[in-house]
Image (cartoon, rainbow, N blue to C red):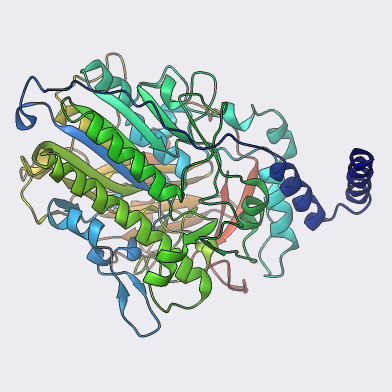
Length: 558
């Protein structure tokens, strides 16, 4: 009888959807389906164990390497970069762990993500190659997300131009778990594995979970993989949630996400994390370090925080103090958790006598997101994640390696995520992969005050939205909307926050940089997966704000 009633209720709801196509009902159905999923309980993970004793002392082995990547962390969220989230009394939420890493290593003052969204940046971190070579140009989204997010955008009352969804492009895509980095690409993990390193991945991957695309198939000996996106169950007694009613992505995530991960199995065999996700992944990272202290290891700790959905522990929420509005306080608490993770990693290295010869590198996958509605996140830079103004591309990049890098060093030369792979491979003494064109540069010479730096040009692209930085000049072009080509030209030496578009004043410079873009595209590989949405993003306003005529915005594809 009970089963019959549930079936009748489901049919009634489906009928309502077919009749009215109500967005709220559709989201409720997604949430209902997710709520029926049952994951196994948390378990002890069988991380590989290194030798009980070391053949060489820690400072005589190749360096251990730890790459820590935050997700959607704003440039202005870090106190050592002159920022920090502000309380109502005007004081700043400090980030002591990240600040310590910066103070004890090198700070790159002009460091860039590989892209303005997460997955292409992660592909460039792992391969050192542009999307023009790999084809990995757009960020894969869960099945059904593109159409639903576009629908919610277009129902919003904020006057934005319409979001466009291409159903034909979406129909031809593989499932989300199979949209990833091709197996033939050579990853940093594979290069280090060949060099005798133990390699472990913990957290977000976003380069394909199944087939031959998961981390455990792309060079990592072990992988604790993010397969969902809640930090804690929504009704957990220790969680503080903050939902963002003006953000379509947030509405979809709260409906579609569960609380699970997997170990060396892609999207199969999912089980619940033991506790709040950021802390749990840090717990497991500490175990990896301790288990492999007697051999060279590479740990890629790819945090989800502080990406939405906004969820913090009650302890962190109380610790950050009085912050308004509520979502900003939850966000600050999430940043605190990421910062604590960095502190715990550094402390563990010290306790095990590994600190001196371990490279710890910290960055974020892209700039802070405007759809969270926190206007100061990327200050003083304009733009957000999904735009290619400096706010969308500027990210922290710090490297600590006490054996080789003097503390307190700063470097002004522009560097980017494509440089991470060749740099860390060179630090390990690993040869470049044979037959592979690497676009990034080994930036270790910059640490030794190299003055003859060979590269002058960096590229970014997101379909028709393309950017080049050549010397101090930066050109952005975008042919959407269709009433003419949008062109922005900035001299970053004179105007680092991109306040003055000088494209009309320097047409010859525009033509010169457009030719560089054309040359970059001349032999480009087509995107592996076509964009299905065109989303309008305001440059100087968050999604919390109303769009008005004359407000600058870009259409960006994904």
